[in-house]
Image (cartoon, rainbow, N blue to C red):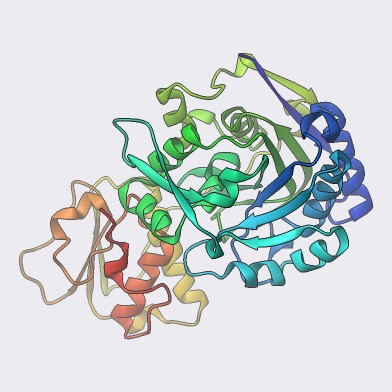
Length: 400
């Protein structure tokens, strides 16, 4: 069945009046809120909040200007309640993310309620048979909402190429599920979650987007764009085209099409408002070469995938940016990729990375995951340095 994706372009994504105008235009294209949202509904809006610092103007998360304009538009449907709910990334505090990025001010201005989904209960729901997950624990608040709006930001992602509508749903799950997604296979898990969790509406914050080493590094892009639709696959396909990225290079999209859900044929997507050609702006993906200019570190790359290479590169950069000198590292051998092997004995510290190196899971510095999150690689390097870990014991990330 064909679907529509609306695109609105503005001039200043930091100006509330302009964003209100844009949001009104978007809803005039996709349908007024009063027709989309039943009266007296309990509406839950799920943003993407991935920072405890004020970083929304860097394109890393769904911004407060966007959120206020969205809530105000939703309130035209006369809902019984509007909730802004999030369960932020591993190692971060949702309430701190709300406070740092202007969401408390949005709540005061609109009357919307902020909700840390981690404070509530989660319900186990079945995922498609024959998949990785078998089931997944999702916030009951999300599942019980009368109307669920997915409100992601538009950005690149070193594991998933882009993170927009599909990837944002991971924030409805528990801490342990987030770890399990990375352990078993992040993109397959995201696709399986989207097969069973279907928001009624997706509104994308492309006001300040992010390119490069997303999701929490990279360069902000003042795109001044809003998108809206009802099908996550279709929204992400259009988003990837706007970013100058082939949808075939976006793993969750590729997997969703293989699983047979969502609108995966571009000919079945009707574009409303601006055309893709009018707003296309090629984004720099997270694909810089992995170069380790340190004589103490030997890299054994056995045809590793780009997410493992990019994750290691980002992890090393984070350590350097924190003031840690890689010259202080002991001699190391880092292996990644299915065709890499480590010596049976060595005077160097051995650091095998990723599930392709699972034969070395018994080693003290093995980093699990497909791909492992960059923060977990950075934590293992911190431990080798003798610096305290930031994200908990390594054993907590072995999720069967």
